[in-house]
Amino acid sequence: MTELGPVAWPPAPIRTERLVLREPEARDRAAFIELFASPEVGTYLGGPRPRDELERAVPEVPGRRPGLFVIELDGAVIGTIELNRRDAEHRSHVRPDAGEAELGYLLLPEAWGRGYAAEACAAALGWFADALPGEPVVLCTQTANDRSMRLAAKLGFTEVQRFEEWGAEQWFGVWSSVTPSG
Ligand SMILES: CC(C)(COP(=O)(O)OP(=O)(O)OC[C@H]1O[C@@H](n2cnc3c(N)ncnc32)[C@H](O)[C@@H]1OP(=O)(O)O)[C@@H](O)C(=O)NCCC(=O)NCCS
Image 1 (cartoon, rainbow, N blue to C red):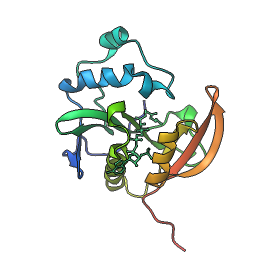
Image 2: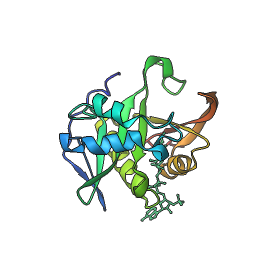
Image 3: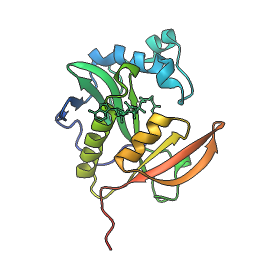
Image 4: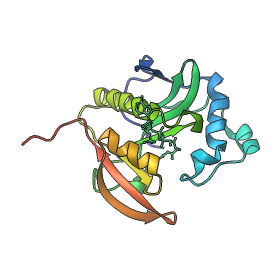
């Protein structure tokens, strides 16, 4: 995986109205396994992974890389938010010279429908805009993933293209902290 870039990592925990975004720790391992094993979470992401496989594969401290935050609500992890750099084969015309920064989000189903994903993503995008000013962020999601499509729109992502991949229609959008002038 390509590094996110020259960002100071980890940042101090980011506090929003209801949530804390922080670097993952060993105590978060069970929550990572729950996320990857959940059929609801995996619906548009290639399906859930077998729990026994995850127990073997998930590292002792999971998800430790610049740009990956766990989302904590009242001391419990409810999901992850990630900003990473797309691999070369996934580059698009938004920034053809380099892998774009891409937003990804996974919340446990019991935390859906309360605006937590929107609150956490807005904070992560704010962190990114401070760390790498002016750099756009892209997002790819299946158009059938209604919740994800609504979230992308709410966050201010705008459509760049739709395409077929993995047997489904994909939506590719872009977000920028810079307001276009004129
Ligand atoms: C995609 C995903 C993060 C969206 O989660 P979500 O909880 O629906 O998203 P939001 O945080 O924007 O919450 C929106 C809902 O909270 C409701 N809500 C309740 N209280 C709220 C509050 N205080 N503030 C804002 N919204 C609130 C909104 O009305 C909205 O409801 P609706 O979806 O019925 O219209 C979640 O479904 C998920 O993790 N899916 C599996 C992983 C996945 O597919 N990821 C996409 C990878 S590209």
